Every structure is written in structure tokens, then in C-alpha cells.
Length: 111
Image (cartoon, rainbow, N blue to C red; front, side):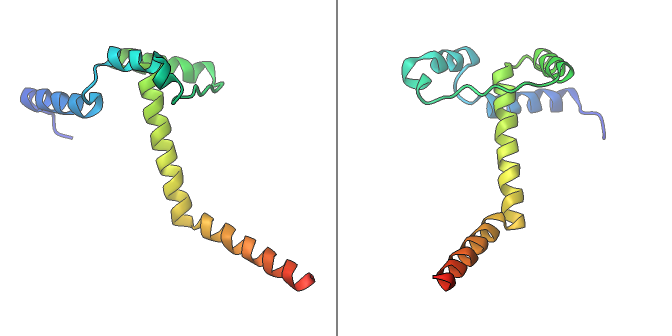
């Protein structure tokens, strides 16, 4: 990959900052999450992970200057999107519907 020029780096950084941060600064987002109105619309997700993975996440977030919450939320969103895409591609919902229909049909024949 060709090295980026200082202008490329500056513009890329500014562009990505706008896209990632949106219109709310980080501290305001954190404050909103603690408000009673918003607190009822969010849920804490906990998971035990290896010490190495936890340390790596901490190091990446610290190095990039992003909160662990934002990093993990983005990872969860991507994981859910990818899982849904795989299930759609493989036809899991159609498969389950076919099995349910077959069971109903068999029960109807037994009655």
C-alpha cells in the first residue's frame, strides 16, 4: 500500500472523526447513557473473556483514544449484522419454517 501524504492523513482523520463521532461529543454521549430516560432503553451486556483479550481491547482503546463501550458496541453491531447476513444467505429461517410446516403436516396426518 502506498504511503499516504500528510494531506491524505489529515483529511482521512477529519472525515472518519465526523463519521464515527456523529453530532454528540463523547462526554455528552456518556452523560445521556446515565440519564434515567435513556437508562431504561439500554441494557448492560457482560461477558467473561480471557485476560489476554481483555488486555488487548484495553490497549487498543487506550491507543486509539476511544472508550471501551464504543469499541465493544461497534463490534457487537458488526457481529450481529454479519450473523444476520450469514443466516439470510444460508436460508436458516426458510429451513426452520419448512421443518415447522412438515411437523404440522405430520401431526395433521396422525390425528
